[in-house]
Amino acid sequence: MKFNDKIVLITGASSGIGEEAAYLFASKGADLILIGRRVDRLNQVKVRIEEKYREQRCKVIRCDVSKREEVLEMSKDVLKDFKYIDILVNNAGFAIFSNVINTSIEEIKSQIETNLLGAIYCIKAFLPIMLERNFGRIVNVASLAASIGVPNLASYCASKFGLLGFSQALYHELHGTNVRISVVSPITVKTEFFNHQSFKSIELEPKIALSANSVAKAILRAINSKRLEITVPFYARGAIWLTQTLPYLTNPIVRELFIRFNKNR
Image (tube, rainbow, N blue to C red; front, side, top):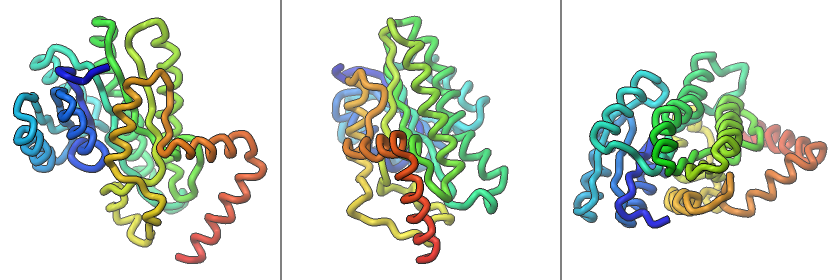
């Protein structure tokens, strides 16, 4: 698919993967709808796009995707101005690094509401018009944590496991239509994701962490792929295979790494 004149809606577009995806889509000639909670940051992205790609339309809408009412209002605004969207990128998400016993119900709920329900709310809002037009692409940004349970990220894993499962079920439901869904699952990415105070004691290994741009490129690839899930980098699929095929070998390794990590902290 060529992206020229396609209408692309991106959630969590104020920074990181969402921002980089916005620039890439704009460079391909797409019109953009940038969704997020920080309007000032969204407007900065919009200004950069309009300065460099003057022919592209770019609309900013403040919306907290964890709130169903706000998603409904946002979708009405979008459909009023654009009539439809061609591509939906569900990128909004965050994590709190904490073990289950020290994580409040409110903190668990907030991650699931944003990372899982936020994507579902957006899909429910725009899938009907995609099916009516018999055209559309949905990309859900998940994580390697959608397939591998990571200690101290149980709530985040729950939201991403759920997102992958929801996507897989919908993938089958959409068979026979010209509406497709895919999932992009990266490993650690260098973004503001780790700015949450719960990560303050963690040091990331730069050789492992990906750039937001590399994941944004994978989002564009996913749109033109028939595969359900694309892992970034591709060899991360091996870790998923090992975990799911040989859990009696991999689970003790994960547990030992977790014990060592906590000792080092």
